[in-house]
Image (cartoon, rainbow, N blue to C red):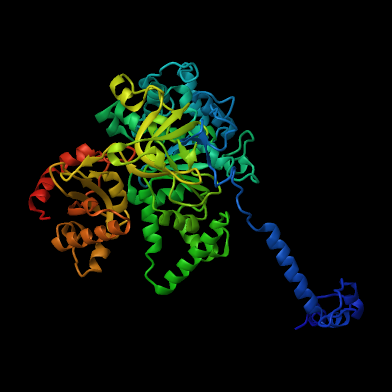
Length: 636
C-alpha cells in the first residue's frame, strides 16, 4: 500500500479529519529529475520519496549516534620514550620531559587528603560494604570513615605513625558490628600502618596515576564526571568496586603485620577508589556465591586476577550446540573487528542478541576491568573484551612500587603486553647472564625507580639492600622484554628460579600460568629438585567442570574418587602436556607426574597469601609425602 493510499484509508476510517488533497504532494521537497526518477513519478508514487527520506534519516541518525573510536592519549606506536639515550631505560610518553609526575591533584598529597576528596565527591554516600551469607550488604558512609580518622587526632594528616588499635577502638564506638567481621581492622590498621612504615605517606598517593590513566584520559570526548560520578554535593557516586577479599581476621592473628604487607596492593587500589568517591564492596567469603555478590553490587570497576577471567572464558566459550557455537564465534569476530578499529561498546546488535546475558551476569554496569598479578592469555583477553563490551586494562607492578608501574594505554586493545610505564615511574631492564637475558637485546630483569617506589622494608636492612640498589632502582625479580611500540612484556621470572640436575633453569610460575589454561585445572603447583632431572606437580581440579570433563572420557565417579583414579590422572597429565607443548614449553619444562588434590589452596589453609599468590614453601611442606612418592616411582 502506498503512503497516499494509507492516508486515504485513515481518512475513510475517521483517522484523518478533512480530505487528502491531490496537491498535498506538491508541498514535499522534490528530487532532481533523472531517467529513472522524475518529479511527476515521485508525486504519483510518494512511498518512493518516503523510503528515500527514511533511508537518509536513518543514515544521518547512525552517523550522529555511532560510537566513535577512542582517541588514545599518545601515539600507540611509541608509548614510552628512552631516557638519556638508553633504549632499555624508558618513561611514559604522556610526560613532556624526564621529570616524573609527583602528584596528580595539587590538593591531594596525603592519605587523609584522599579520603577528604572522596567525601567531597560522594557527600554522605556509601564507602565500604560487606555482607554475611543470606543477608543484604551493610554500608558505612564517607562521613563515618572520615569522622573516625579525624577522631584519631588527625593521624593521617599530620604524618604520625598511627596505632592499629587506635583506629579499631575509635571506629568501634559507632559501628561495633564491623569489628566482628574484622573489616574495619583490615581496612584501617592493616592498610594504613604498613603504608606508612614501608612506602611513606606521599608514595601512597601515586596509585592515583593508575586510576587516572584509566578513568580520566580514556576518552577525551567524555567528561571525567561521567565515569567518576556527579561531583555535585550530595550526589551518589556512580563508580563502584567489588573486592575479592572478605576479611583477614585469621591472617592477622596468625601472621600479624605480614598480613598487612601482603594485602597492600589491594589496599592501594582501594584507596584510589576512595579518592573518587567510589563505594567498595567485599564479597561474602564464599567463592561459590561470588556471582550473587556481583549481581547485587553491580560493579562499574572490577579488579580481578586472570584466574577468574579464565574461568569466565571457559564457561562462555564452552557452548555445546553447534549452531550456538557458530553464532558466538561469528559475533565475537564482529566485535573484535570493532575493537581493532578502537571502538569499545556494549550496545551493538551483537551485544543485544548474544552477549547481554553474559554482561548481565556481571551486574550489567561494568565500565572497565583491571587484571594484574599474573599474565593472561591474549586469546582470553581479546575474547572477553569483545563479549563483555567494556574496557579491560592489564597492569604490572608490586607492593614495593605502590602496586603499579606499567599500565596498558587507553585505545590500545592489543594483547600480549602489560603496557607502558606510568607517569610516576621509570622502568629499565638489566642483564641476567645466568638466564641468557641481556639488555642489549631488549630483555632483562625489570627495575623500577620513581616517586612511587618504597623506601625499604620495616626494620630489615638486609632485605632492603637486596631489593633496592645504590641508585634507588627496585629490582623486581621479573624478566621483561621491550616491544617495538614501547610497551613491556613479561616473559619470565627470576625470583623463584631453580636448576634441575642437568643444569637447566626452571621458572615455575611461568609454567604454572601456562597449565592454568587447561580446562580441568583450577590450581597447579610446579615443583623441581636440583638433584632430579624432571618436574612434578600438585594439581587441584576445577570442581565445576572436572566431573563432566572426565565423564566425556568414559569415567564416572565423585569428585574425590576421580582425583584418586589413575586413568583420570593420566588424562589430566596428557591434557596439560598438550597445552604446554602448544604454548612452547620445552620438554624439561613439562610435568612428568602429578598428584590430584581435591581441596583448593586457600588463605585459610595457609597455602595462599591474602593476594592469592602461592605460599611455595608451605605447599612443599604440606605435600612432602606426595612429592617424595612421585620422585620415587616416576620413570623417565
